[in-house]
Length: 220
Image (cartoon, rainbow, N blue to C red):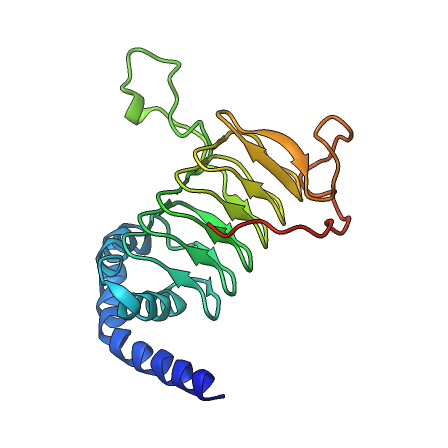
């Protein structure tokens, strides 16, 4: 009870502390547009250290993002490139992550130095008479399902389902279905948390509805 009251008070103080920054941000969005103004502010708030930074960032993003859940933890050095990001309840994001236009579900755990980018075709490469940076590409919005754990230094380029585990250093280039455990470069499914192997079933990203087998997986 005391702990809950202390956290409530700390969140209230943080919301008050970030209010001037949010007002300046809103002024910048009026002058520059929301998409142009947002990345610089994300970089700035990422540099506040310690527990102060955790509370400050959560308060800031609760006021400027479409959704930032209660008890979400956004660690030092983590930046978002789009003001349309959504962050679920009790989601944890480790240090120095880079996250694009992404929906993060509830209870997602993202380890340190993870990159979640909007697809693998962000620039066209078909023409030689136009620089790559000027050629059009595709920027799909990425979804990370609830209760998914993404290991350290993974690179995510496609949707990841619910209750998944993505191994450290993996590169996800194709959608990962619910309950899958995927590792490697490019990431491949080695088994499912329901107990099935990758060869025993074919599952689409949104079709796995079984309850997972009881299993303990170490925290990142």
